[in-house]
Image (cartoon, rainbow, N blue to C red):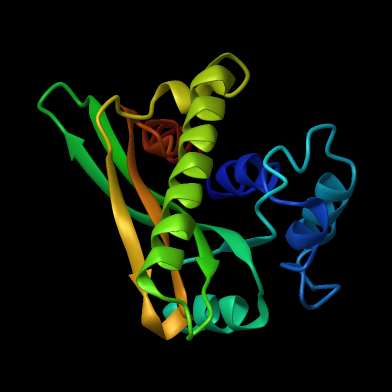
Length: 190
């Protein structure tokens, strides 16, 4: 599930910016090379070419280090917690939290008018991303499970020298993590 989110949002920034996320160049994890190959061979990429970089993660220190290397605008995807609720009939309903931010590094000397202009441009890019998500629901089933209600909040991060907009989303569905199937397999094999 996490890697589906990674691959989906990787198609929006400039391809060069997405490739920079593979900082190590190689890894002991075979999926690393597979993901890198996937990115290299994506049929759709740079869909919002005004976005220069790609940041994906949940560790504050790692995210801060990655953003510190960037210049210009970036797409930052932060996946959050899962909530799981099993009822008396053994039905499992789960929610997955996701925050998608389009932000830009801003010079220290920016005045309030310049910040307003940048903020407006980033809001337009955020809405463009939201439009893609709506149109892509037929191609990516997990997008259909995104809640219709979401928040768009200002992203003001002095520690990143950045401003932008964050769309806070929830993916809601039955047994998103396939726990029932895993439990069934354990029962059958045990």
